[in-house]
Image (cartoon, rainbow, N blue to C red; front, side, top):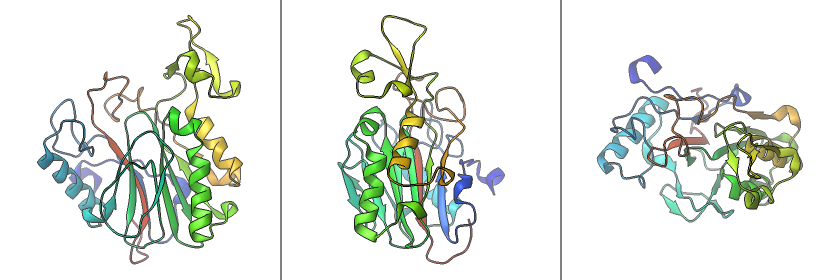
Length: 259
């Protein structure tokens, strides 16, 4: 199937075996968008031809065996607002989406920021959060778990979570103002000097999930780096802002058939 479509997503192994669950992060292959958005760009706000974006969603839906209209996204604003999703449609102004409705798939777009996918096998609830440095500083991962707890009665100790592919600490250099928002355990001096630091956002987001009550064995981090893995992932920083968007999505099918 992957070879025929050209779509080659990342499948988080933490979710393997959960009945009916769809949980992936797209890479950049398998779409129709032109360079520098080539080719599976799923962001409608980056100057792409709208027809290309629609076709990319159609292809993704066909690949996953779901209706593309059932994928719910949001215009992200680097904040910590969380939306409860109960129906199809695109939202605006949120950086995390949660749902317990079968047949809906909540998605977060990234191109260096970290997507976080969370699933509660007991209630069937799922969440997707967008965590760049601002979201991580605002503890959006922890807040998303709490929102699922409030909305669905989720027990954090029963959840599974994945910190997806973003820019790794070795590639993510920041200034002192941003560094001041994070514990020193996530920082190391940059070789470039001038008081700049490298920030490990993956670890910061992982630890927020642990602080929220998830056991360490139930939290997984992607092994990839959006900046380093040229040709596979979009990277805003590497490509100087002229790039597409990947989509990390999660949700439960209306039947328990496996992906």
